[in-house]
Structures are given as C-alpha cells and as structure tokens.
Image (cartoon, one colour):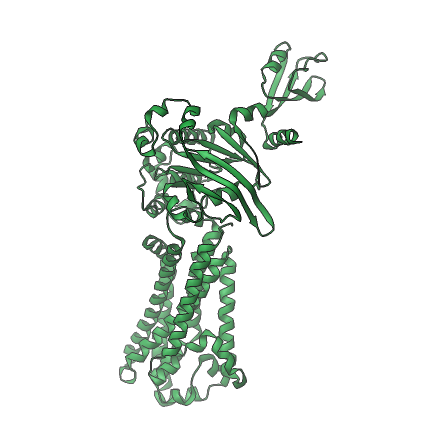
Length: 270
Length: 329
C-alpha cells in the first residue's frame, strides 16, 4: 500500500504544489483585503448590503456575521468559489486517475497482476488523495494566517475557529473524494469518472444555493453536502459543528467503503 | 553465451528432478501434475458471449499454445486466469487455487504479459521495473539483469522515459516486468507483438529455458508459426468455444498450405494428382494449389518438372479452422 501511495504521490506532486501555492496566495489575498473595507464596521456594512443571491452564494449569515468582523470575513474566504473549485478539482481528478483512468489506459493490468489485494490498491490511492486534501487545507490556512500577520489582524481573530473552518473544508474534500472514488471504481472511462462527480458536485452546490435563496426549498438543502459546509457559521458562532462534520465524515466513509467493495467485485474487462 | 540463472539454479525449487530434464517432453508430461485447469468456463458480458464452456488442462512444465483469431475469446480466458474477470459459470484454477477467490495468493507465482501492454509513460524503464518488482513482495527480481541482457535492453535504454520507447522496446519491458521475479506460471497474451525476428527468437529461447526449469507457460497468439515454434500442445478457440486441443504435430498434419508454382513450361495434365493436393487455379505456367499434411509427395512430383519459382503463402488460422469445421460437418 505504501508503494502505491508513494508512486501516486510522485505523479501528482507538481499539480499539488501548484494548487497549494494558489491557495496560499488566495489566503494571503483574502486576509489582507479585509483592510480595504477599513475595519469591522465597514465589512459588516458590505455584507449587509450584499444582494440576496450573492449572500446565498457565499452563505453569509446576515446579522450573526455583522458582529464577527475579520473572523467572519475570513469565513467568507473559505466559502469562496475559487477555494471550492480547487478543492473539488483535486478530489475529482485524483479519484478519476486512481482507478478509471488506470483501467482506461490498461496500466491497471500491471498492478493487478501483482499479489496486492484490490482493497489495498484503492486505499493506497485514496490515502494519497486524502493527503492532497490535507496539503490544500494547510496551504489555505498558511496563506490566511500569513495574510493576518501582514495585515496585523491578530487581535481581531481567534485561531480555534479558523482551524475548525479548515477541518470543515477537509471534511468537504473527503466527501467529494469518497463519491468520486466510488464512481471511478465503477467506471472504465476516465472522462466519465471526471464528468459524473463534477455534475454531482455542481448539483449539490446548486441545491444548497437554491435552498438558501428560497425558504420554500429550504428542506431540500439537507440533501446537499454543501449544507454541512458552513465556515461563516463557524466563524461567527465559534463552535465546533459536530453534526455537520459527523454527516460529512459518515458520507465519506460510506462512499469509501462502497468504492472498495465495488472495485473488489468488479470485472476488469476494458 | 551462458546465462547462469535461467540455466540452472532453481530446478529443485520448481520440483522437477534433473532426471526428468534428461527425458523427452512426453516422458516429463507423464510425471507432472496439472497447473492450469478450467472446467466449463463461461463468461458472458451481459448478452454477449465471451467464452462458452471452455474446459482445458495445462500440465506442469508445458508450453501450451492458445490460438484463435482476434475476438475469439483468448483475452477473456486469459483475464479470467489472471483473476481480472469473474467467470459467469464454471471455474478456473492455477496450482489448484481458484483464480477469482484466491487471486492474490496465486499472483506470487504468476508472470503476466497483457496484450498491447500499457506502461506508465512518465516513468523511466528502470523505475517501472523497480516499482512493479517491489509490488511483488514475495519475490526478488532475480532475473532482471539477465533478461535485459538477452532482450538487448541496455542500461541507457532503461534510464530513458518510457514515452520515448519504440513499440519493440515497450514489449521488451513488458516481458521483463512479467518474468523478472522468476514465476512458476507464465501467462502471455500475444508476447511477440512488436518484436523483430531476432528478439522473437530470443524470447522463444527464454521461454524454453523457463520450461526446462519446470515453469508452465500459457502462450496466447493469433500467429500460427509463433505457436508452432515453442508449444507442445495447442488449443484452438473460435467464437468463444474451444474447437480442439491437439499436439503441434497433429496440427501440422491438419495444416493446409497454399503454394504458388511458376513452371518454365506448361505442365502435363494429371501431374498434381497427389493425395492431399488440390488444384485451385491454373493459368498457363502459373499454378496455385493447396496441400494438406505431408508435402513430400508433392515435392517429389514437382522435382520432375522445370520450376521457375515456388512460394508457400503464410497459413492463416482460418484455413485450419475450416479444416476442423469440415471434419465436424
């Protein structure tokens, strides 16, 4: 399993490095841009005046956020579309490459003719992809905290909720990774293994967005993974979202188990 | 040149006594046990039949040819043997182990060359051999160096990225990755593809050495001469069904060769009335005919004539299949 892990990591190192650098840069930008709003009151006014659609998109929480100042502003950063795109892209791309693309290219035949249980192959690749998620989250945190240091915002933030927001982001990554691996385990086609989880992720985001926008659709929001990813709430309330994290990790676990079982039982016919 | 490792060291390990190696192939076969077995092996892809009720046995120390045209079911059979496909019905065993249920255990004994082997393009040749060698935790790649030497893959070649390799070099690398850990069972799907005649001969010699040490080889191909060169028995598959299993010698008897003869002058009537010979076309001095089985009676007749040119066309598998179908009918 360790060899599979290292071999896969070697293949992804450049992409991972570039994505990590992008998130570090974005984190610095988010934290330092808080100053352009000239402090907490101005940023609160900015959030308050957001159109409802933008507010739903960034999942800002109205009055709760007003009181939170820099902390709430950083929470919006975690929910920024760029962060969501980078996190989703890495999860989907690595999962697709892990199995479906190996089958499509037939390199899987070389691996499966070795005395390695199939579940170890999936776990080795999944461990590498998970490490990628950890690297991304740490990069974002490093960027944000560097930005905080540059903008002299230490007095306006509490570190605990920032790390919890990072953990919530990692949980979101693991869920996307889990169902992307499940689809990849069932597919012979790398392209399809990218398109299906991408469509699913966009659908989840859309459902969450619509549920935030229209009260009548609010119950639908619970089926979206993004309902359980709410950094701004963590920023403003300062609590650990046990339920959200529990739901995300449970879905990730079930999808991972499904992926292992599917790959264990499937034919390699391509 | 003597290649030390393949030539001697592991005979005892393989369980084949040195006495046996001094005997004929048939003598050896009478002593040894079945290594590859399938019984009523069937694989359907939804409604499409891959293979149907395929039953065969390959004995220890045998090179078994598996012949069939493209799409006949060779690769399906091989993928079941390697544990990549689960049979719809029937079963397959290697060394008595079920190829699906015990697939992890049996792979320690297995060397596999897929058809059109895909390799990791961004790796260097040596990196690939190292990676795949280390994945086989039970065995060291003891034959790597010798195989590289015999297949003429130099250290410089191995230090290059695979994406720069020619088709032949890729095939050599695929062969080495499969055989480097000295497996007991070799499952080879079109192993000569992309190799030039010299390298094909080198491969045949390597396989013969493996056989001498007690390895069992399942050699799948659609090229009849390749199979004739190294195999003792041949199974022929067509449309998912095993048409026949016979000795190569029997296959030769069934083989129908097509021959083109150009005479210096027109031949008298009745000159080709030889048993097994059928005249297909006669156009003045140009004659096209088929001959089944022994060609010597025909050659004796031809020796009486003045010949300008004579060509044996390559025998196609379909010709042999047609021979079997005629028999069945």
